[in-house]
Every structure is written in structure tokens, then in C-alpha cells.
Image 1 (cartoon, rainbow, N blue to C red):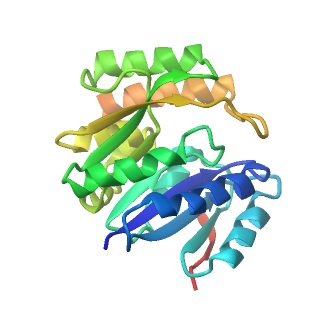
Image 2 (cartoon, rainbow, N blue to C red):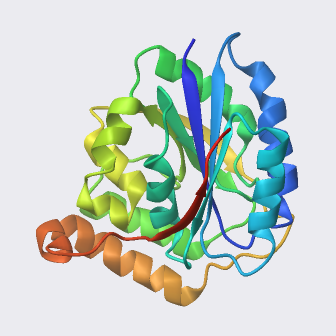
Length: 244
């Protein structure tokens, strides 16, 4: 049976980790019998006890949990890329650490992948945490580069090993890995869902970070060679806690 790697970027998520990881482990029973799981958790320079919570989860499931600590905060896309480098599954899913995206969708996404669909996108049909910036950002990306992208935006995906290998070397993935996957994939299956409001902690998504995302996403997809010529790797790993 196939192995699924689940990559989760974490930043100031000490309160979320126990709840989110318990929900993901409980969700395993809804997958086809024999499915294997690998969790790759990346601490993106958190200033709280996120790393300690991640290591506590690793201690519970040492054979299927890897924890990666970055030297500082590089941003969620770079944290995801760091995690993807150490994924070994036949397919990979990316999900946020705050449980705003429904783990319950992942078995359905996995089933579509088993049917030969390289990229499965869970997109926000509605969201409890309404965000004007998010709506505007995804509208701009659809208008400029990706007319076939699902409406409402997305950052919850499941994709093939082949796409994982390709996206790791695509320069544009440094600025927006989700649209980079969409660019690489010959097609996708969309699943609409309602994004939950945040229940634990607070978002660290500042307006400064939002503005940088918009600028770099547009420039990165419009002029990738100019943006990334001679650039250094986008992240630095301090330590890797391998599965045992």
C-alpha cells in the first residue's frame, strides 16, 4: 500500500500542535487499509514552545515523525520546501498546523490520487475567517497567471511523488509553492470546503508579510529568471530529528 507524507509548517503553534496532531493521527483510520504515514513537521523559527511540542509528538510516534528546525523564521513556503526535501512518500499532502483546514478531507484527496490524479486541491468555497486580502490575492493570481485555478484560494493540497520532485527545483516555488504545483501539474481535482476560524492562538500573518507575498508572487511568476538568478537557498536547517 502507498505511503503518504504529510508536511506541516509550524510557527508559534505550541497550543495547536497537540490538538492538530491528535486529529491527524485519528484520521488515519479513514484511509484504505495498509496505508502508511509519515509526518514531517518544520519549526520555522518559532519563539515559543512549538519545537518542544513537536518533539513530544515525535516521542509518541518515533517511527513515523520527523522534526526539522530552521535557524530562524523564513516563511511558510520555505518551511514547506525544507520539509519536502525529506519526504519519502508515494504522495505528499501539505496542511496548516492550526486545524483551520479539515483533516477529514485528506482520505478523499488520497483516493483521487490513487485514481491517477497528480494534484488534488482543497479550495475554500467559504471561510469563517473572512480575509479581504486573501480574496484579492487569489483573484489577481487567477487573472494574471492561472485562469483555471479554483476560486476562493487554496493552501491545502495532496500531490504525487513526481510533482514533489519537480517543484523542489522550480524557482517560483520559493515564493508560492501552491501555484508552482498548479503550474507543473497537467490537471487537478478540486474539492470545495469551508475553512474554519482559528480557535487556538493568533495569526502572525502581518500586513507587511502579505504585501511581500503579493509582490514576490507576481514578480516570481512573471520574471523567474530575473528574480532567482544566483540566489542562495531559501532556508537554513539548524537540526533534523529523524524518525527512529
